[in-house]
Amino acid sequence: MTRVKSRLIDNRRALINAFCASILVWMFANPAQAALEIEISGGSAIQIPIAILPLNEPANVQGKSRIHEIISNDLKGSGMFRVLNTSGVPSLPTTAAQIKYTDWTALKAQGLSIGEVQQTANGNLKINVQVMDVLRQTPLLQSTYTVSPSQYRHVAHLIADQIYEKFTGQPGAFATRIAYVTKAGKRFTLQIADYDGFNAQTLVSSNEPIISPAWAPDGSKMAYVSFEKKKPIVFVQSLYTGERKVVANFKGNNSAPAWAPDGSKLAVVLTYGANSQIYTISADGSNLQQVTKSSSIDTEPAFSPDGQFIYFSSDRGGRPQIYKVPASGGSASRVTFEGGYNVSPRFSPDGKYLTYIRNDGGSFKVAVQDLGSGDVKLLSTGSQDESPSFAPNARTIMYATRVGGKGTLATVTVDGLVRQRLSEAGGDIREPAWGPAQAAPK
Amino acid sequence: MNNNIWKIAALALVLTACKSTPMNPAKVEDSSVTKPISNSQNNGNDGSAGTNKIDIKTVDVDSGKDQLSAAELAKRQIFFDYDSDAIRSEYKELVANHAKYLAAHPQTKVVLQGNTDERGTHEYNLALGQRRAVAVKNALNVLGVSDNQIETVSYGEERSKQNCADDDCFQHDRRVDVVYAGQ
Image (cartoon, rainbow over the protein chains, first blue to last red):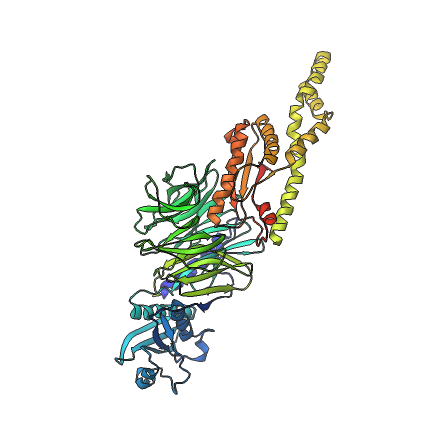
């Protein structure tokens, strides 16, 4: 907890520093109203039935959405759980001693989540959740967090992650953050928010376009492209100190930053006086090395999770397709063969899948390719879908879509079965990037 | 979107403002006209250099020619077909006019800003816009303009109109803007 607090103090100091820059950098803007609307288009064959009961919590500490509601939304949205309706159960337990297991076996629940929230003397919250194995009548999970009230939603996501992992054997990705760009009038902002759109904070705002946010592998920095100097320049900015550095500002364009998995360098796209080509550069802007040398467009680099290859979009074969090249340079080989137009490759963190955008007869859709089998699936249903990126657990892909003429964000599970849409009041949202797994508050 | 309307208005303002600017350098070309006058003055009274400079500045005999030249340079948008970087024949003259001016003024610098419509991804469109800017640069190079006078950059789809319903709307976004340094 103390670490979280000192981070907040650092952030405020950074705010003051950042005002000196020509572009305003805000760490604490008014949180945008946003929420994921779950729109389940199918369901996994192995949905786990689970009951998530309201915690016993004093009315004055309850969030707008309560902990059990946040956990329920997380689990439902994953497509892996069926959260049971408990309205027919006569009394809902909040302690293990109160559980009448026959109520829950009757509902065919496999899991039962109960708990309580207490306010400590210094105003913190002690949040305690237990998850029971209904068939064995034994505790599966017991989790206690003592945090400041501002961590209420975060703790709910952490508990949802634990439940997800306990039942599926895979880590969850609910306690994660996303970055995205908003455009409202002539104002562009780069926002950081929880994965479900809550707790949005402005990292950068500008009257010129901002594109291509990219999370450093440790989640502490963002690389992005800003047009504030009337041309695309690559910046790296620390989330916690506000420190902002130019990483690439060469003649022509500087764009498409992508971090190497070890965070030591980035792939960037530079043009000088010719077409877009891929280079690598150290995170401090030194040690520039050219990776691709072609007369075609080579752009949208993405490192493979082992750091050995850079995948990228290129029209060297006529139409844009995805290719890969050794990260140190060399000859490129083609990766996508189906469809006449495939761009914007992004890896799943486990290296098993590649997601990209396919132009499917004039409609731009999210595709996912199983790199083992080579199978490709189209996952999204929009016509201008863009910027896919994987959740840290590789189960879900977030992307930009357009609804009613406005840009918004959506997620889809890798099996294509569950879709969700993030809605925000006002403005246009684009260029999402799903951040790495987040450390738990201490 | 309003935003784009303002940008177009701002662009129009820039273009209007630009009209007069090429006139100043154009006067330098006219020094051939002023020279005989200076020479005759020099012959007559061994006048000071200061007097000569004043004479050169006040020559406005060819202002009509200046305006003609400004009008030729006032067109600064080159539009492209969908997914194409080929300079259409109707823009060859526009490019040639700028090439002639830049070749004659090697100190003048120009930025070629490529743009695309909103279809496709932000970064790929940035690359396509760049390719258009490079196509114009290559055309200028062929006509004698030096590389160090030109910077090619791309805005990709970032300045595009949004929610275009037809190609007339998209067409406006597929262009290269010629922007003279300092303007």
